[in-house]
Image (cartoon, rainbow, N blue to C red; front, top):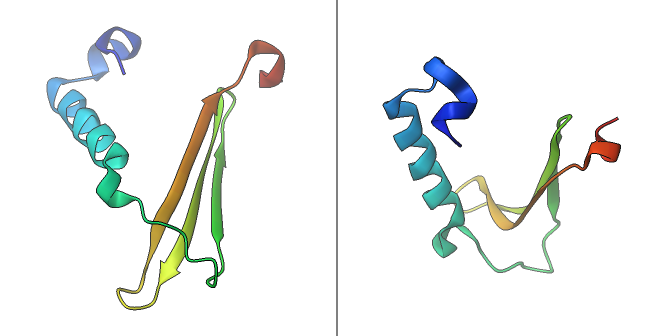
Length: 81
């Protein structure tokens, strides 16, 4: 993210939070190897500018989902319609 893109509403604290979030989401420790015996969960999100998905599985021991893989990409101009 850039400060220019958001003008005056993007403040230093927001920029620092964004950097921390990016770092945490890309660290290897957050990803796990898939267990092919367990079912997979696919989370998706779409906007006019891009698509994103998370492939996850549920861990009953800690009662939460964990990430197996991330995917995201920007849409081209022809795909934005």
